[in-house]
Length: 310
Length: 284
Image (cartoon, rainbow over all chains, first blue to last red; front, side, top):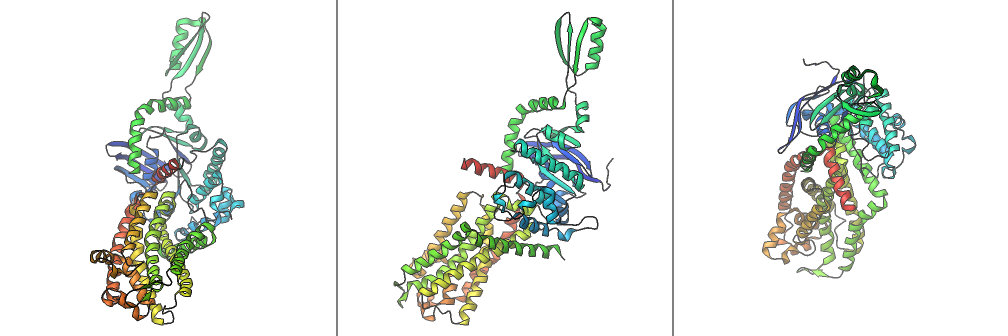
């Protein structure tokens, strides 16, 4: 059944991407409703960036149906562009501009796209306060610290009050403190802004902290989709069972820990002591999944990045 | 208001802001002053040399020719350099990510390059006119001619610069190649010495590109009529100037949007990231 109601911000059906002879996305299907943070989690080379760039309208897909806010991003017009926010990683662009000056300038493009519900652009002073840059408003951008720059990147991404915000690997290369601050900022935005946020990350911890829904992408396929709790339950991880019998320690990994333990008692009854069952943690499952992929990924990843540069 | 008009306005504002930045930052200001001052120094040293059958002073020949060369330099090198730098550092991608951002971006570059060019020309003309006394600055006709050569010249070279900037890979090396090629063209375009002193085949090469005609047009605007004897056919050839510059303008205006669109379509977060990594590797 295909939902067509307005609440669906992301509707991807059998999305495929191929660079030369390498398939990067193999039929990805994904639907997301308005609101909240959705994390696209996966190891490097899983196809996350390719996917998010297709959704941003910056990359043409090979096949499949894609709708972002009801519009095909490959044909997205300026009106659509005004409804979408993209947080880009700044490097040294606009170094001579002052923070306030740049936000005011970039915001001015959105003024013609105000609607009854959404007043565009965001008032610069308010925006500066939201991202915590008020005291740096008059600084030249090239004098900002790395963390401040990323806050500015976020401010630029949301200056047009987007209905959907894209963040591609937003904390890559961050130290722990900057990462923590950034997480606080994104969480605050999701709560107060009401914008739907789609972020990609290879860091499970980050996905768990920020996202209500995590979609795991591996080798260009979605292999799991749900809240952190759901994923932990749903992914067939190996639980660890440990016990003592006749003074000897035993350990066993199994996907069917309950059945295993029942059998164990059935066979040995009261001889069993010090029983421990460790449920498969999401982290462990994700890591083993990444490890499995890595050997296979290395080849395709090189091909994919060559395709990107070309 | 119409968003397209809004973007043109935003582009104008952006161009003016960037012009202001370039005149208030020391490194950019010194970059701005370097070429014009170099030209003035050159003028100073050739003050007493003569040229052509009429024994016209070389510095009088030089000054307008160099103004013409400045138009070509700013338009071709300035525009292409800005475009490749802005692709490299992600400025262009930012423009692409906002509604009508590319339109605003292009308008701003035209303002920025045009404004910088006018400043350059003014510096050379004002300081140069103190060294060269035979310029016809008192005639209204001179200024009108200067204006149409400048306007048509910019329409001819700016799109070409945008094409060059879109085609090159954005590395320093390709910008260097562009620069060398243009230097080579300058050498056969009768900027530093009348083109009539060169072999016929070189004259033909020079006359196929806009630089020669920009120089000729500027000389026709600023030199007294007696100076025409150093030119091909002893004529200012205004019709031919308009025709050649117009042809290049038409070519550029047709091709530039296609090339720009193709280049912009390829920009994405990962292409900027790849270039950034490459540049950082080269630095480290």
